[in-house]
Length: 331
Ligand code: GLV
Image (cartoon, rainbow, N blue to C red; front, top):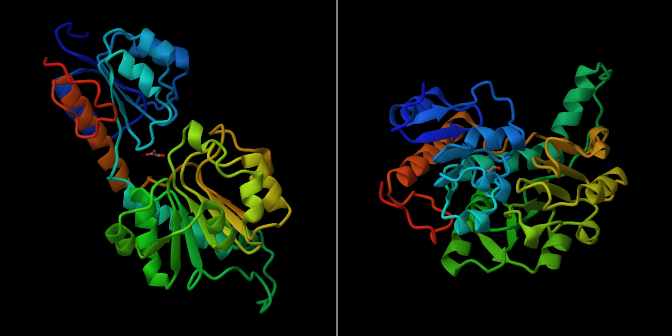
């Protein structure tokens, strides 16, 4: 039985028991520990009477959803990206939006490196070949890849995650160049050992191109056929940003034609569907949007999302409020 005096909260996807337990002590909580993704209609009907929701990257927060939830005061997205949330629509309705910046930077940067290495050194395709029983004799001329050390790393999007990716390059004696809407302050660039480059210059000179920008109308298909054509034939391309930043059809064509060496991709257009062209590509390493998925980091994200939600519902400013135009209301 729900207590009408308590605030109501929906947590749309499975989360850590301790985090849920803490929320239950404060609120009436509807959880989804069965972890079945909710359709837009299910989401709207379960969120309808809620004061707050903790959402995940695949939950679209649309004007229609918001209109179905007249009591809603906070959408606490359990992700740093907020492209699943219509922020202006939330702001218009006085709904706070929060995200989980900071706690996932290093883990996401680690995964970008995992993809760089796996793609450059053919880790996944050689593993598969070995398991499939093809190894008859050691071959000096087999499985040649691309060197990471002493190569040029080009990072597009130099926010916290881009900077964490850059800092790791020193151990591999790499040269680092980056492109960003605004160049970093000099001390920041120095700390990352990174030099600013024009967009096309970066694409045509880097050996490893890593994309780490938020997704939105300005970055839709930022990397398409024109940009991919600028890459070196030996380039390795990595996307840990969002599907939609890259035109998958164009990338499939480039990889299938062997026009670059390889790609490592964690995110895709229309997730969880995969462009069918990727499936047979030996030079693509694919992971299912798991760049932040270490246990410790996912726990940190869940805790931060919960802290944001609690603050908003208790009338104080959430630690990572995305739309500060919405002022927390006293309880
Ligand atoms: C994951 O993709 C995130 O935005 O946190």
